Length: 388
Ligand SMILES: Cc1ncc(COP(=O)(O)O)c(C=O)c1O
Image 1 (tube, rainbow, N blue to C red):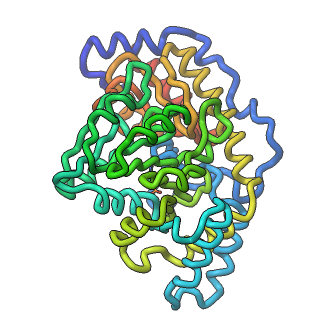
Image 2: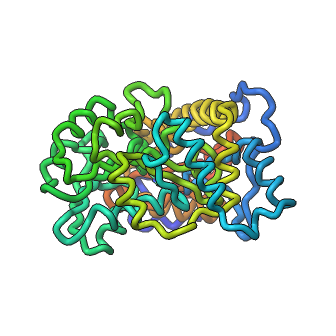
């Protein structure tokens, strides 16, 4: 029995979940998938040791890394690479990324995940006189690192339609510092249209680094209004873009991310990165992953289909689902989500944490069709418990 503490929450949750019987009767999501049988790497990834249950909490790719990356990892296990420092593989990945993005090697810095890039950027571009300007809510790491560095942290609410308030953010910048723009935004999954970013970039002082976090680029590609700003790095000397292999590349556990930007900013960022922080397994897997697009396309297509069905089911249950351009979505349940998160957890389904700025919104990562079916069942059983 779920303890929905406050009577008001209990009532609204019951009302919400009881809004339609169609919710429980929707066709199983699994039945909707039209894709060919997945390759071995693309079947649902088993939870790793000690982590049981269904993990819809960290915006990972449930289909795992591309087969080429797995083959590269398997090759490593029998090789001698582990006893050598990774400098050659580091250079090789930088060269591959430079070729893929059409930039020089000096425009790229590697990190152990893009978290390390965000950490280095906060240290490189923020200080007591150089604030970090971020949205609220957004991915918290950059703001956290900037505050730890002693920089003022300016958090500006999203607009009423859950977009970055770029005017307010630009106005909050001084001559120096960093403006962090997460696109699509985590946790709302909403997009900032490319034109709006261009106007922002044109008016920001060059002393302010515009850090665009494109962690979910692979999922946003093809969504109306979305475009990567990587092609602009030659045009805006203060633009830095963060990317990661943790999301659509399915390699979150390996830890590999990178930054792209003008050589001067990248050099400043590199100064804040530890030496040899990339591990050889991540480097070879990432390089192999860059060699093909089939797995990414499959992951993107499946994500879209399962996401649409999940959104439909949540909407049928009375939730207001924000439009998503990523591999997660946010649904307004009309009441505090803390008991829902806890209730799902007792049934072995982990969803995103509660975001204090949006306490009624539940963030759910899009897993496989089967995982989302389990989510729906657990969600429906909360309704039953709440109504009892
Ligand atoms: C927007 C965003 N940026 C960066 C990261 C960090 O990812 P990683 O360090 O695995 O590259 C995440 C992780 O969830 C994220 O959502």
